[in-house]
Image (cartoon, rainbow, N blue to C red; front, side, top):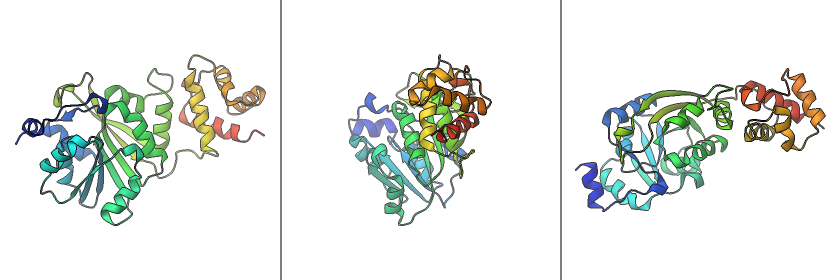
Length: 279
């Protein structure tokens, strides 16, 4: 039975609020799985499996696939489409509210690192990825389909229009690269934008030692919230003495008149570490 026939059988209607665009090209599905380098030893968590086309492809290589779907109307479709495949477990739930480590342990009976492989709903890509990274989950690799523009933000260089707080955060936690681009024509229904598959390898240790992660987050947020302002003026919102901030910047060999969007990850960390020492 084709994907369309299964969806029609269940009178399924696509919901814009969940950003539902299902992949129908088996060549693309195989490329995603190959990029993730999935083996029989791997547990894979898939967010937003849709009708289960990617889920099936992952299951051919993985030891276990845990598919988390927020749309209750898709659960019977997934159960039918994935029927008889013993290494797949479908869970109805909101990935933003789940402890993925606990989900994996409850499903497999063991605590072990796992991979996330998914065609993420584009409306919630950034919050989901940052939730995965900042929660300290035992994730070793993330391979996801995202909107092309978001993928380019992940990989942007300082001083470019795509470079932002998301770029800095993603690269603090991961080694990131764009694996390949994907045409909008391989989805059902057809989205308005092209896509890209990104490969995020979780760093075992941050690239630079951070004294206070909260100060780093506040610094990055302040720098990009007012992109047109000079760094010294943008950092006023940190509620720290301006002269002390200026001294920290000079000590880091950073001109206070630079804009925050020109700082590298290493420079952000240096400034954050300096600010953490202010009395």
